[in-house]
Length: 155
Image 1 (cartoon, rainbow, N blue to C red):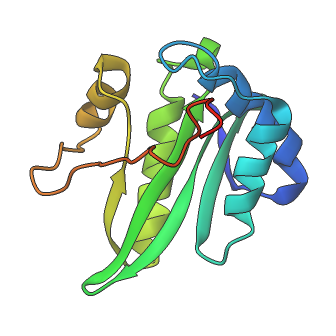
Image 2 (tube, helix red, strand yellow):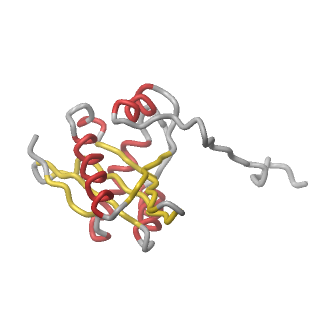
């Protein structure tokens, strides 16, 4: 596999947003991203001083991105992968593994001690990360609260 892994740059934001939208609007997520909302999400993260992200190109074409935030913890730097996607038509060709390996190397060089993420349950998501050495935490859980959302009534 001939590929080049680069640091993500704001000048490529439109390209990242198109990729993000196309991947996450397809199975298994079936989200409803627009190019503008995808660009806003990515840009908001890229403009923080804790951002780290990589883009993978092959044949001059963007194939995937991985990015997130560094967090100082008592025992060192933890890194949360916030988004990771490979062009749907290119999945299963090793691009995701190359991106993840590149990120692990970068994080190791900066002294990170842990990588974590939140993902959907299922073989294409949780199963993929398990094959890459991630484990489902027995210690931490994800909790949400959507009570602030309007139910459509005028109360």
